Length: 84
Image (cartoon, helix red, strand yellow):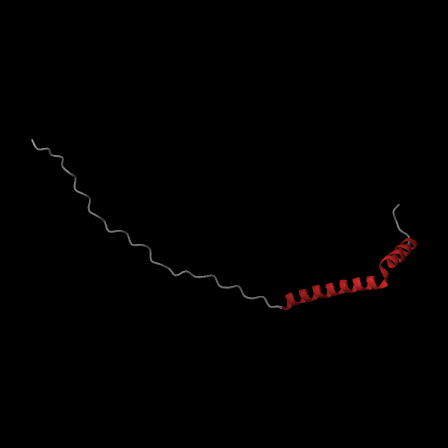
């Protein structure tokens, strides 16, 4: 139904060449190729770089537990003696 025959593709390519010109298309494709090369180079550098070992976890010096407070003697009950 919407299939394009080879003749349609040839017409489309000729129209694109007329609008953009041969120089502009080759320049665009060259930039596209440079981008792909740069991408592949970045992937290659990532794979060749050895993974850095993870940093050891920080260790906190152990502090002794707080000593219990010395026991205080209970206050003596006050006598409520009233003078007679």
